[in-house]
Length: 119
Image (cartoon, rainbow, N blue to C red; front, side, top):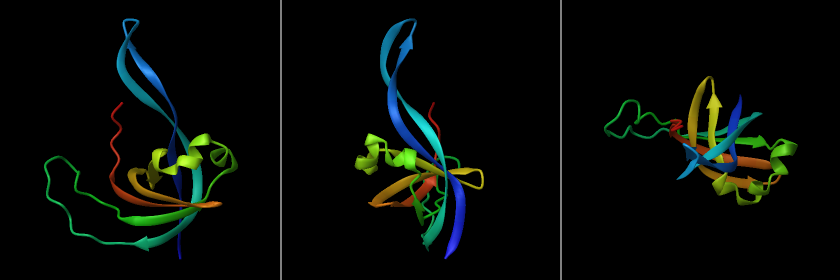
């Protein structure tokens, strides 16, 4: 199997945004990056979707498996995996995580399109 080295962005909590000392009602995710290495399990090719926007149709469509670092496994969010992985960065490009399964001690996830930081 092919190997990969990259980083995984994980949501560790949320902070409320304040404008002039007044809560705006918007919550901003705190994302922590973890260095990981693992295997590429599946390389799926799908047709490109034609939608509006620049580079919104690029899709990686691969499945990755890695052994979770100990400090990642200690997070309470590890138990609710669907809510914490935001992106995986491979060769300088961040890809959106679309599906996650936890098979202790491994985490297996699928990727979709390019991740766009909205902050």
